[in-house]
Amino acid sequence: MEMIFLNKRLITSLIVMTLLALASVTFAKDEPAPIRTSYYELQPTFTINYGDIRRTRYIQASITLKVIDSTTQSEVQAHNPAIRNAIIMLFSRQTTETIQSIEGREVFLEEALKEIQNILIKETGEALIDRVLFTSFVLQT
Image (cartoon, rainbow, N blue to C red; front, side, top):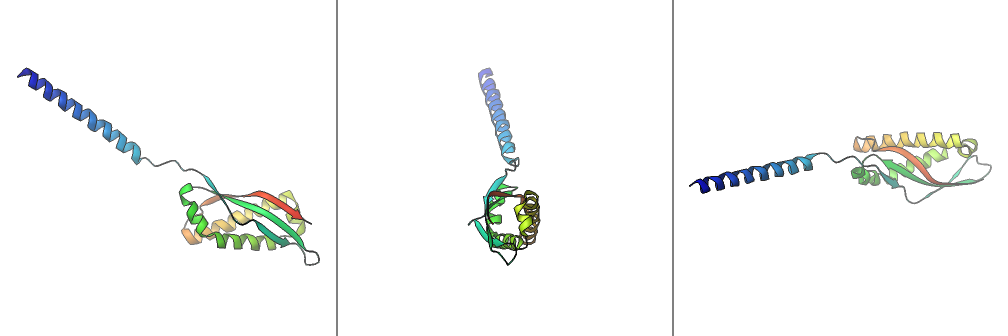
């Protein structure tokens, strides 16, 4: 009789330990995954004329967006045409002096960030990106 009692205690203890182990695994899965930044390259590369009308000058630039959460990259991609349009319009407003200076290009990137974030906020309710980067930049003057 004592042996049966010990077996019941042992089985009960094993069941309780198993349930506790399963509960800890379940809670670990429920924790939010850390936000991982990703990058989205706007394709194709931008080739745009700029500056005054007296002389045609060209820019060829590759632009990449730093997406704040890798799970929302597809939302950014869905609005690629509107984003590209905003960047093209922003390039067309640049002067030769502005686009040829490092400071001017930094201002351009800040303005592009604001315009793209405004588009994404309007379309999705969130900014979704936190930086605009040139990954290549070539001027023909």
